[in-house]
Image (cartoon, rainbow, N blue to C red):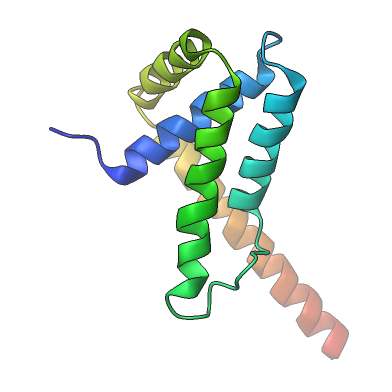
Length: 122
């Protein structure tokens, strides 16, 4: 069965993260990798996501272009090693307890914000 797009993106992102932390990675490649990751995770985009079609196209073009540039900046063998490690990590079982703890943390944070607003408005 062919890997899904989300699986491939998750593996690529983790491979970039591992390569950035590798001391053998040149500083210029580390900077490009960090910029790509920051743009991918940033809520601020060049074109806001709420604009139909165009809002998503910038993510679909800029992030893969940044990944392509990053891969060209480091040796292929080094990236293949990190990609294999990321692929192996993606096959590990996930923690349902960890997921439950994160959901509980988000619910607690939302309740705390609601309670703070409610107390300050009364």
